[in-house]
Image (tube, rainbow, N blue to C red; front, side):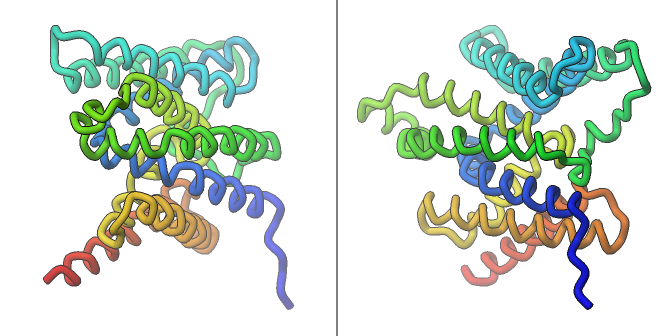
Length: 267
């Protein structure tokens, strides 16, 4: 007789699928703009948000979103300085936020904190409140992404030409950084700080060999992300492996198959 999964499994599935749909178009922009390191830096800032949330006794998702948005603002300022290359400034902020976050969490007084759950996520610990954050905030993110899609695509593929055609790059860039910060903050609970960029980048990489247009790539990235979520959760439940890493393993396997298929097709 068929047994329905437990409620926590359904919550994990709905949360991860919702995040896959939200993250897919943003991941494509990340790949086109070659800004994975920026995303990694924003994700590391999430640890500071966790520490602030625990210290202030507020919702951790909210505090992580605030920390990620603040980090996005700092990155915007760093991109305007001319003293050192941007990748060097990102390296500084990347390591500083990770170290400060770990130190801050260690100094927060109270019950023992499971740092591993923040670094690698725990998709099966998703609550109903988390689902509200994902789908409520995700609806806003998707709406803004659709509104800015054409400017973002044109700036990503050929910035000089887009600027010459009258597109001001500052607003789309700043808006995208904020959207990326929000998605990273929400995704942190599912796949963790150290794996969150894989959730954004890997589906886009998987979709690229099979796509002729930006829109097709975004749709395929979402479909492959959903498939990776389903396979990853099945792998986790059947092998008792952690949920977040299992999803990333499934996504990477799909991406490897896609890249191989695309390579064989072009021969």
